[in-house]
Amino acid sequence: DTAVSQTPKYLVTQMGNDKSIKCEQNLGHDTMYWYKQDSKKFLKIMFSYNNKELIINETVPNRFSPKSPDKAHLNLHINSLELGDSAVYFCASSRTNPAVTGSYEQYFGPGTRLTVT
Amino acid sequence: SQKIEQNSEALNIQEGKTATLTCNYTNYSPAYLQWYRQDPGRGPVFLLLIRENEKEKRKERLKVTFDTTLKQSLFHITASQPADSATYLCALYNNNDMRFGAGTRLTVKP
Image (cartoon, rainbow over all chains, first blue to last red; front, side, top):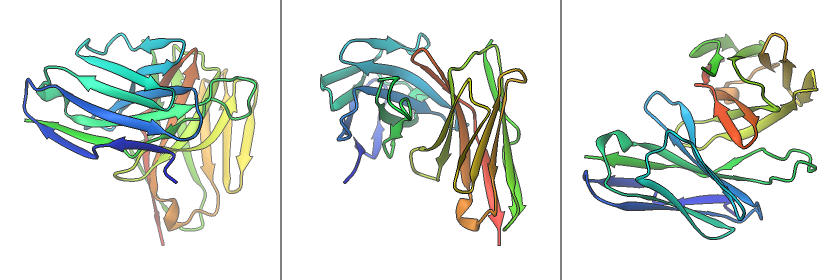
């Protein structure tokens, strides 16, 4: 069983388009995340979200927006795509109860490679 | 500004030796430090977590140390195997803020 899944795995699109990447987790976790990994392999957090709170990394342009229809899903919507948005995007999930041993360990999806031309 | 530095971009060692990877940080007070493994084309996989009040953690052939005075974590793989070849990322967590280092690409040669 796949713990964290993302679709699509590859996404090629043109500048100016709007696109979405979907993420689903079947681990029963209550917090989900989106990360961007650029060509230099730096992994940067974009959002963390649970049913109570959305935390946005202040460096993320407002063209990026997370949408969560339920606890198991956190989709990433991107408006007006730019060349610099090309990267691999990872979804992840974790528990947030600090009393649970191993909490905050994150489970990552396989990634979505976005190429903007 | 906050920085996380992993000692080298690449590390090559011989099978059977101990690999030691370093993670240094500045201007940050992590509650937890984590190590992840990332293989090409895949997402990171959690390996170990160590809390700020812990000095050392072990799991099978893996050992992590955490020195909050030096602001440094060391990650050791003993009796290394070619299958340990991957990129290893350290990650610092505090208050919903998770920051990753750039990673060290480890190659274990038979």
